[in-house]
Image: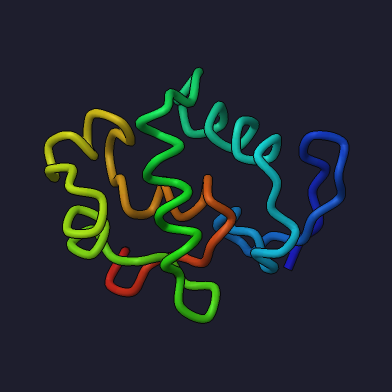
Length: 104
């Protein structure tokens, strides 16, 4: 466990940078984490996925890629375009949730 200052807030993160408490998440944190992940701007499509994942998290764990595609109606290809190189893991981190099951 480590503490970091993001958007002027001190938050606890694990060794991979995932927030330890989903309740510490704010939209401002999401913007800063997205930049760290190489996403310069969160579009309405990004926010749709982020908000869906936060609403459908179970015990602070993000939904899997399959659950995200089924729940949002976006294809896997569209998710990879929004969150390149591992969309489930990236959206989980940006949404302030734990790493999805099955992610390496």
